[in-house]
Image (cartoon, rainbow, N blue to C red; front, side, top):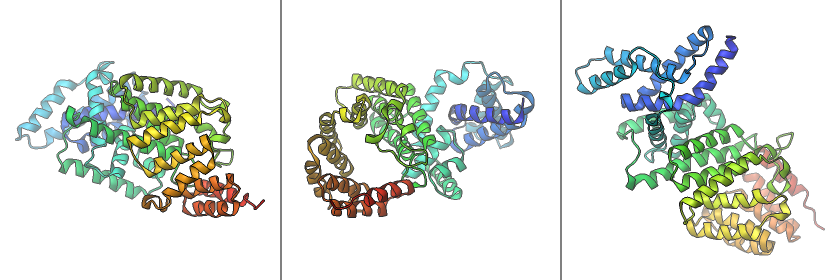
Length: 421
């Protein structure tokens, strides 16, 4: 096999198999850090051997067998006075037996359970949000530390420290490798979904840097969301988030122009939306709504996204329906940001003056003081009312607050176009 092709194949296999590999090892050795070390050693072995021998028929099973042998060697070299370590060696040896695993073993039910445990431990509430994101992308998403650091525009050393700190926190807190008990599940699931959606949002609308979108992050979040759908098929929130991400992701390829400049929703060519993703999203939304008559926040946001997806033109958008959904969402989870979005929907449904009235009430909200979208939206509404001088000042203020270079250019261009009639 060509060496370059082999390395590409290994990279692809690692992205697919690493989460299940680390999850299975964590269950066996009861230590997340050690499990990742053994998985990394198996990856190194693959990088050494596969370019010469070719990729095995069942690469995931090869990696698991290799990692188990590394674990056995590790525990044999340690003192086995402790019964726990002896039990670990016994379990590893009973699984390994010096041969490659059966074809279906990596995809068996036990590995599905292990994956779910890994997702929950990576997103454990004991961790800081940035630690949850970094650890989830590393362990469940299969990304390398440099890849995650580049995605979130932080120094590699900083990102590495976050991962080390997260693992240490989990170890010190003695967080068990398990799916939470039923009474804890809603709160813990909320943390998992929050992390996945945070990853998706950073890809869909980058908060800083030179790119308006980062599709790779959206793809990682979509993969995690789809994985969670399979692991928790009866949870309506899971399908609601999946629906929201699928529908939003359908617009990615038309959210930027040839030079990377943003193309806003109302200006996009809807013929080039990814209709396969829209169908997946609508199916997930239907599944979420069938599981519970009480809509959760993700399902409501997905329903809003579905209104846009079903409109063949911007003019055909059912803004009254969207405004009604925002009313429901605002009651469910009161939030200044949701109120800001509701103001946009009200302005589109009932006129800019209605939206501006709500926006002006939000002006004193402390959490929105440096939130660039507040003056951005207010400027757009003022412009629609012909108050161009005020609009220009608001949009220029929005440009000064955003950390995204492409968005700054868009806002300054918009402000420059506003001249008094």
